[in-house]
Amino acid sequence: MEQLSVGEDLFVTISVVGLIVLFSITLAHSYHNYAERRNTYESLSTALDIAGQLKNDVLAKTSDSVTYGLISAAPPTGLENYFNLLKSQGIELRVEVRKLDGELVWSYGDEPDFLIQYFSPPFSASFPVAINQSSASRPLGELIVKVWRA
Amino acid sequence: MDERGIGYVADMLVFALMISFASALLVKVSPADVRTIDDRYTANFADSTLLALQNATANELGGLRYELGFSDFTLNLPLLSGSTGRDLGHKTLMQLFVEDTFCNLHIELAGVDINLIKLSQDMDVKVRALLNGALDRLSSGLFEYRLTARTKPIDMSPVAKVWFETKVESSGENQQRAFSKTITMAMPISWQGLLSRCQEVYHINLSPLEPNVAAEITLELWPR
Image (cartoon, rainbow over all chains, first blue to last red; front, side):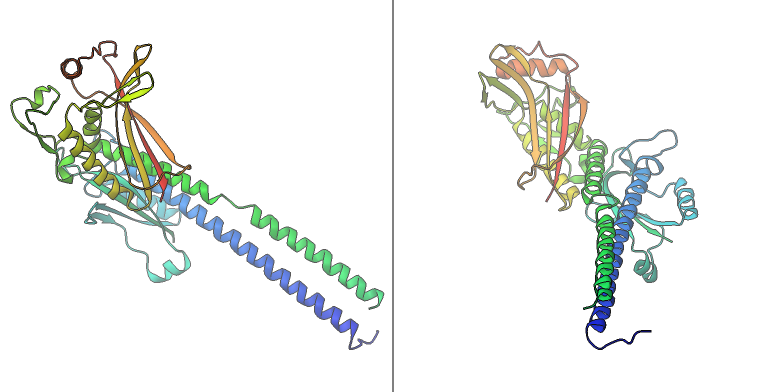
């Protein structure tokens, strides 16, 4: 076995180890960025899908018809089933309906707790809607859907 | 440096090259462009805004009441007759916008727009203010907007075109990258009433217009 001389061999070894570490860090950083973007995209996409389903189907249904853009002034009965369906897929959500002045009309679902917010940041989407208080009173409002992974 | 050292350096460089290539691939292979999400959200927002305006009533935004004066020209609607004060708060915002469109006749003669008095000046001002307020609050600082309603231009002669058009827009500057959504709504007022009022006020025969004339409503959104 050859003896390691303090000089060129040590310099080469340190350079090789240093560069390997440097490029490993670069690779890890690239993967982290990629994973973060992918997670953000998937979460936002899920939030948009869920908000769309709520707005055009679950919350827009009356007893015999669906009126797009007009949502009920109280949580409908089908909302709990929809929540349970998403829960079985590991998705939690909170739905809020507010008037334009910020007054809360109704909400459904709990706010995510601190630990969940840290490990799985919630994503929210909000869309304009009309709130079906009565046939003569349908104020403009906002549907806010907050989605996170359980 | 001996041959073994040169070999180490060569190995290291090849390894570094492979790592760089893998990193570049990861950076490049993004699941989606940020613009894709932005576009999807903006499209959904425009769609929701148009639907909300079709359902929301004016009463909840302070209502819409306007007074008729002797100098004011108004549509001869049975619903509105018999009073100088007219309350349209029960109508949806989109119904009011389309009705306002038919108060705004435009004429183009040989390529030149001619300004005409509006069929109902007070209603026009109040409807536009109402919609401006609603859209400002709905867009909540995220988007600038332009809401336009117009009918198809009709050639009255080789050099004259007529159409109805009105517009509500935010104060921000326009951008090249705007998203737009268009819907079509039928005329919500009496066709005969509109024809006779236009003939009375403007002395224009609009009978070549189709009785089932509809207004195209376009909402354009672009980020602030």
